[in-house]
Length: 210
Image (tube, rainbow, N blue to C red):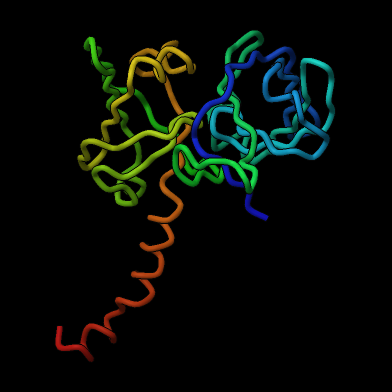
């Protein structure tokens, strides 16, 4: 079952403990707002990665980061007391303020430039070309669980713009050039791309005069 998030960060939480469990990693994360109605088994996006609450305390929850997720996201870089973006899974009656986010991080990107003005903060992110191909200008992308709009694309980089409020109330204001972020490209865009690749085969094009 796919859990849906919006990419609108609800709270900045704190890593309280990190321990190894065989080849996995178990996190204890201190939070408050997102735990007000939480229960065991609920899904929480942590820096854009969908995790499951396995143990619940008054102001903290425990979640396991599986081996594959550990290696393919930035979670393996987490340190004690580090801040993380968190968001609860969307409820059916909730508003979709950002875009459809699954919490299945596909890759990571490296911040190449941070440009600040009085009105906005622009980030240039470098990632693999195959993920750039899944993006479109004015389309959506998720960075560390934050729903953002793509303003420019190149072969290996893309650019997003943030309003000062989003920048200051998430962990992005703590990031520096060359820091790494989790990336999830737009779910609907990936689906359309997959379907088009299936339909637009060489045989289809030949039969239709191309």
